[in-house]
Image (cartoon, rainbow, N blue to C red; front, side):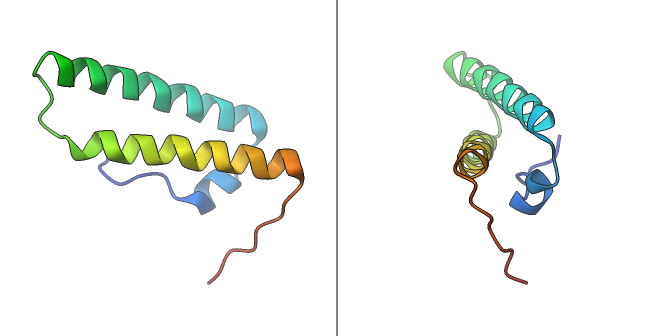
Length: 75
């Protein structure tokens, strides 16, 4: 499992269905991480933060698409 989060640029290249898939995966991982944390099995606490940020990033992108906002990537 990679420690870094998913880049916004990577997410923008995905279709709507793929984005929903990513969201589902991230939420599932978050659930598992929370479960591990609750049972004292979680070694990597930073992963929780990364996954939460990924979820927020996906929601932001979905909302932008909903509103028809085109974001220009700054190089």
